[in-house]
Amino acid sequence: MSTFLIAPDSFKGSISAALFCQIAQQVILQRQPNATVITRPLSDGGEGFVDSFALAELAEIKSIWCAGPLGRKVKAKFGWMPDSNTAIIEMAQASGLTRLHPEERNPLATHTTGTGQLIQAAIELGATTIIIGLGGSATNDGGVGALQAVGIPFLNAQDKLIGLGGQALHTIQSIGEIPAHLLNIKWQLACDVTNPLLGERGATQVFGAQKGLTPQATPILENGLAHLAEQIHKKTGRSVHELEGSGAAGGTAAGFMGLLNAQMQSGFEVLNNHLKLNELLEQQIIDFLITGEGKIDAQTAMGKLPQRMAQLAKQYQSNCKVIGLCGHLASNRQTLPEFDALFSLIPCPMDEFSAIQNTPALLAQTLDSILGFT
Image (cartoon, rainbow, N blue to C red; front, side, top):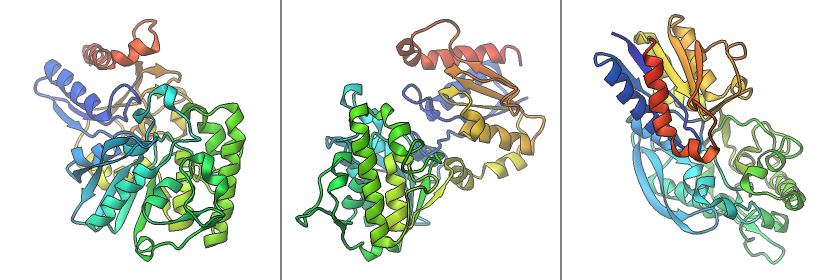
């Protein structure tokens, strides 16, 4: 009787980590009714971050109506751990790309106000620790919308609050008083992005295009974030210009690190600390680990979640067979030696829309084929 650990990231835009786990469990038990299946849907800080805590029964789900990236009201959720007064905020919930139609993407206008409203709801519950998952944002406002929503004023030359979106950052004349209660909160940022705020590897130039940025608007946002960094330094003495990870989520990391002394940690490490994956692998013999994400490529080998999960499994159990699944496979076992096998879910030439629409069925078919040989 085999024991399977299912621990994937989401396939962005097509299937959540939680649904991946449900499908995998169903297929495995159809093939091997006596198998033991342990599911741990994971997230690097993006989509599914809150669900990872909730499905492991570590956090309760709380929901509020808040502003989406362009201000439309959306219903968004966060995780609440009452025993430790800890809130789990997923930036993608309120301020994520999935909240917009492709033609609406415009980081000049999108903002993080809704993420701030989620944070404020957690503060009103009594949060003393706030963990913010920074993946999947549609924004490039340096976190200013969120910071204003929790009470930090960014003021223009007329001593009025600045407008919303990345286009308004250049109008910051000063940053007002930071409410004392915010400085008493432990702020933790969960993210696997190490890009700095500015420059060729910065928030705007690396991630702007996927958020709808046009070449003509690039200097506006780059200069706006540079100006924000100067204002943060003026306010707190902290320099966030080249800080590792400060470019995460359109510079939201820079805003929270600079003004609230937030600490950055790998999204995988944050989850591992709470889900205690090490202990699970120490105490339970795992025959097969099935992990994956939408794309397995050269980036995966740089410490993305599936590789970290594979490394962890091999560290504790060298005989565990590690299987990586993805939509787009652009790597191999020579590059990713922690994996015993890598599979794409796409069995034949297929356009991206069809692949995304059929991901659940393709996952079930692929797993069924693999299990036929185990």
